[in-house]
Length: 184
Image (cartoon, rainbow, N blue to C red; front, side, top):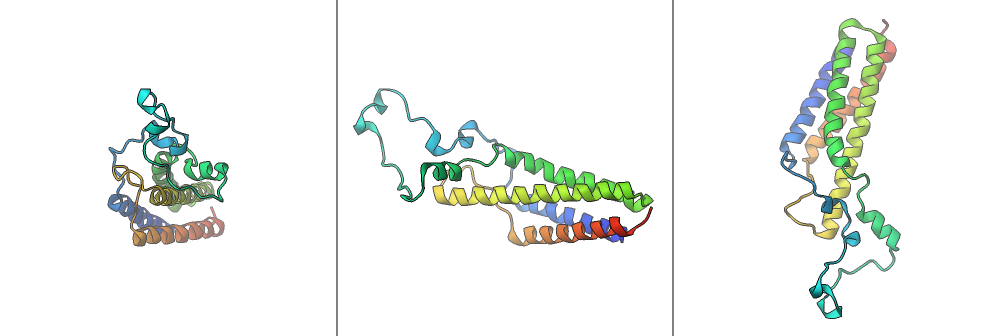
């Protein structure tokens, strides 16, 4: 059963790699400090042209009259600044390290290696779900704000994400069963 989990883990890693290759994530995409600050919190332009009521520029976007300022700020603020970049690294890294421990477990059937591999699979799943949630929030925020098309929110193909998630779920369940059932 440990070999089945190993093969399934490799399949899931391949699906995840396909998700990354077909996404719009690029290595040259840099996040500026201005993108981390919500638009409502950015300071107004300074100088003589910005002084006076006539020089205010175009009208502000229509606000939701039932949303208090704290809710508007919470909707616009990033959950954790830089979380997307951290999760882009952590999710695959944890998965690869967990795969290495599971390979060791498959070869020598040491329960400690199995439980470490299972723990890393759990951490990988948590990082992956958090990454998915951060990307969904960024996409919804971009749709609401009609942001700059030069900085698109990450997008992934739905079928590949579903395949990767289903494979990861099955891997997680079978890894738990294997670590519980197999003896040292």
